[in-house]
Image (tube, rainbow over all chains, first blue to last red; front, side, top):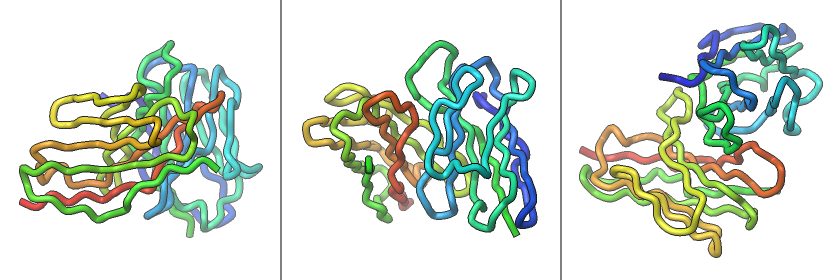
Amino acid sequence: EPEVTQTPSHQVTQMGQEVILRCVPISNHLYFYWYRQILGQKVEFLVSFYNNEISEKSEIFDDQFSVERPDGSNFTLKIRSTKLEDSAMYFCATPPREGRENTEAFFGQGTRLTVV
Amino acid sequence: QKEVEQNSGPLSVPEGAIASLNCTYSDRGSQSFFWYRQYSGKSPELIMFIYSNGDKEDGRFTAQLNKASQYVSLLIRDSQPSDSATYLCAVLPSGSARQLTFGSGTQLTVLP
């Protein structure tokens, strides 16, 4: 059973539009991560979220990106004004069990974002 | 820049053989090491993780870690066609950072 569920599985959007990607963990995790993978390239870290705050972020995670936990359970990744180069698979990830601080990160099934 | 390097392959082995996948990392203080399997268009699936020097076995998979050489490997015994995938090495670096740094992956094909 997956630790996290991501929606939508595929999103097509026009350049300049805002998109919101969602992730629902099956249990209450304090740590939460977003990664992305451009087609044919490495999995890249975007941002980590700990106890409802951004813990760390990469250079990729610029002002166009934001993360929230709007209702205490779901996590969202928002891209305000999408660019063609934002086309990628976006994964949320979480440690497998509440209370463990190690990063045996389990990945959601991903959202494929296509910017046209 | 903390790097994780893998031979991109493709690596082809016959069914039943041992597949050996290698990974080196630049950050000597790295703490934990992970192997993921990724089928095309799918998310990474955790296979194994290892923290201590030496070998760790789980079924057909054995992870090997040598921190002195900054080297981690994954052996797949009795390879099956269903093992054909891209294998990603990921490293938890030193310091307070908790995010994984991934290698580019090795594409493995197991020939029936």
